[in-house]
Image (spheres, rainbow over the protein chains, first blue to last red):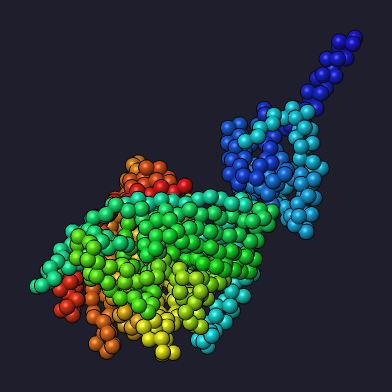
Length: 141
Length: 437
């Protein structure tokens, strides 16, 4: 009986992850950008584009989490805003670390204006851990 | 003091700026934006960059044989900037710079710093490294303001980044009309008895100050807008009118006006493909270095327009320019540079990038006439400088290329004494390796 309940519980967890990852998704990937190097911005967007191209936008759940200096990718003025909009239209999610936003607000004297496709999360690193607990694979380009 | 004409032009330009301020700001890949701004949200605190150009040039011109002084050479028959030989290896340019934004979180301010270590008209006089660009740009939605020392708005051949220039030597019109030389008291042609060649008519020591290098110190208001699939850019600049020389020699300020409209065909950066049309003007006054007792100043005006088409594998560029006052009379005649002569010229350039190869072939036809009004002027001669240039470039990679060019020159003058010298000017070979880092 205990084994049966265990199997049912395990199946329930798997179903839960599957539902959160999307009904038809074969892969769930989170990309981290926390580097000040501007080339990393291009790189992380290129990687996202390649993932979508390889798996197909309906077969992958993809989220880019930006924190620390990497949050500049999600500034409203960022020169890559057209690419971010294009990726967002394919279902890619963009998460912006609130801790970083608050720290930058102190330096700037005002909160940085964010890309409209960016969704603030309480902490970037916590968001990554949460996603990994749900079965996402972490990639740091 | 800024005169009334400049003030009115500046006001008119400001009105245009105000009218355009509500239109969407474009990310046009043009020289104003490439050299004066950074990509928002991405630029680092300090990006190190630069380039080196090593070259070899050989001039096939014949000297003028003087009845008593022997063979004599004028500057176009010698290899610059030293003008001491008809064959020379040289490191023409070696530039090292930094650019970026001091506070990466805030893209509203950026800087551009570049120093020249090579051997050219900027550095040849004292062989010291020279700061060629040092500017700060403040960016707002309505207008961008660039201050410091930087390239002035002007013709494409002068304003473009020199490390992507498709030839080794400038056209005659750009070299003579736009690359300003600044004479000062004491500058005269000097004999060089120490040289194997008798180059006493061609010593670069005639000019003791560096060439202008198409630069000036001042303030520039500019912006770029996207409208109807085109990027439209303008610039209004006030400068000292003193080239690479920090400081000024008079109270008059030069006014630079520039407009460009560009339809992009793709790509980005200095090699962006597109169709660009542009027009510009420059106006200022120069003091008479040889008559420090006079308060009279010589007007210097330049204007031009052009079109550039680049869509792989073809490139076509046409520019025409004209000017009045301070018309260059040769590297050996600084004392004749202060004049009210007229000059004009143009060039047509074709480029073909051979598909599926690393080769590019180029053809350029340029002509320049100076002293068109010399009959009514106090000095000068009417001289024409026609050059046909064939070139080939081998692109080793995106940052390195070999440029080979061959200039076929026909120079002539309506004044016998000048024509005697010019008619011997012949062909010139140039090989140059460029590496950008």
